[in-house]
Amino acid sequence: MRSYSVFFANYTIGEDAYGQVPQVCRPFGTKIFLIGGRKAMDAAGGLLEEVLKGTDLVVLESVEFGADCTYKDIDRWADRAKELGADMIFGMGGGKALDTAKGAAERAGLPVFTFPTIAATCAATTALSVVYREDGNFDSFYFYDKPARHCFINTRVIADAPWEYLRAGMGDTMGKFFECHFAARGDRLDHSSALGREISNLCYGPLLEHGVQALADCKRHEPSFALQQAVLANIVSTGMVSLMVLDDYNCAIAHSVYYGLVLLPGFEEKYLHGDVVAYGVLVQLAVDQDRERLGEAKKFLEKLGIPSTLKEMGVPLDREYLAAVLRETVTGPDMEHIPYPVTEDMIFEAMREVEELGE
Image 1 (cartoon, rainbow, N blue to C red):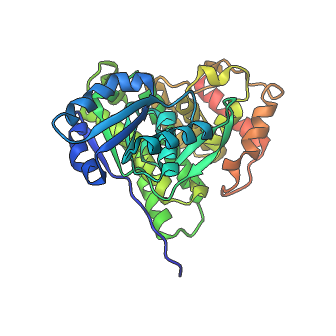
Image 2 (image 1 turned 90 degrees about the vertical axis):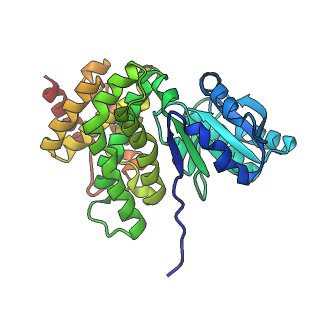
């Protein structure tokens, strides 16, 4: 058999996580090019500066990544890093900032280190970037051989970030558990995919146990144990699943429902990605007739305050109105590897069941 390699996500988590930067990063050089979001660097840049004092590590330049992660910005910052003679790239912020930093590092041939300041996605630990066109529409996935060399997760910074991002991250994370098990059903998995599927269990169980308390603590700006468990699920567990399983097993109905609903005018501007994926999980469970888990998941979303019906999101349960949504849901790329065919009728009836459960 041909050999293959699996690269794991290394990370440090805690209120003093940045304190490990000199020890972890110094073997790669001394000159840093920092790419981030403006709010993120305002929140965490000073903490990074403090830990670099008294070391020979120096930030040559800090730049805002841009409005989206685009190939134009990736190439621009890769060229700038090389002009400066940087030894490494640091990415700081949310998913788009981190994806830009990872892409720039790949193009520049430099190691990259990530500093997530919100816990809405697993971008800090995955080996890909979601790239958009200049008009803001999706372009492509940019895949890498390995994730960032190390991820530094400061729970104080995340506790002080808007709590809505943590909540949305939990919605997206629970999707990883349900979609991975659904998409892989009936397949004979190799070791890597099987291990990734088992790790996906940690994308739901810990959230059921700690998620509600974590959200309450985030609203109080407390970097508690519960918050740390939710952050680990959102950033690390999901990232590990993404790294290890075949791409076929990363998404299924829940994400496809999201990509359908965002076709509705103004919808994407009103709702965060993870909140909508969480609703998509309910639709997937209804399609799969897993009513026990459907009830459990719905109660959990209600406790988090995530909209769990179309009515709550201001969307009518009307077949004609949802025509494009249903079509996109069943034809989207996330539906290419699922255990049985799913039709528009099945999705609509599942939405009806979720709606009735809400009543």
